[in-house]
Length: 132
Image 1 (tube, rainbow, N blue to C red):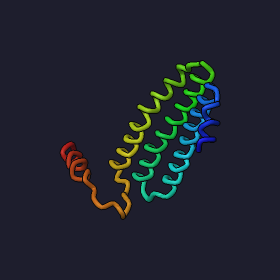
Image 2: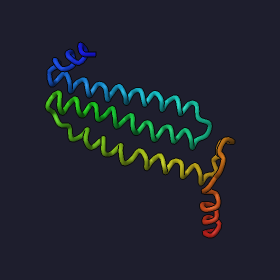
Image 3: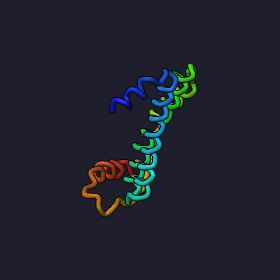
Image 4: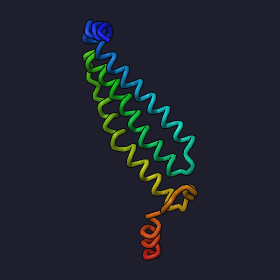
């Protein structure tokens, strides 16, 4: 362990920042693969969309943050476009996932048989009956 620490401490600053960026990009890629497995394995659209929006948002944010750190600390270049993309993905991905699931629910897309309880049915469809 001591020899590993000596090797890491001897790295110069740019290599360390490149390593941090590469680790974040790698973690983002691994989470993206986990997300793909979740999309394939889950049974209904609600679970699949959950896997797609939550984990993919995290994976994209980690990857873009790794790229941002690489360019900022390693190259000395701050990308405003990359910063805006990070903020845009952080805001829009969960909202779009919510809207897709809301449209699916209101279109009566069947839930999985493993779903224990549908807490929204009374609230959503009772208000639709009032408006008709």
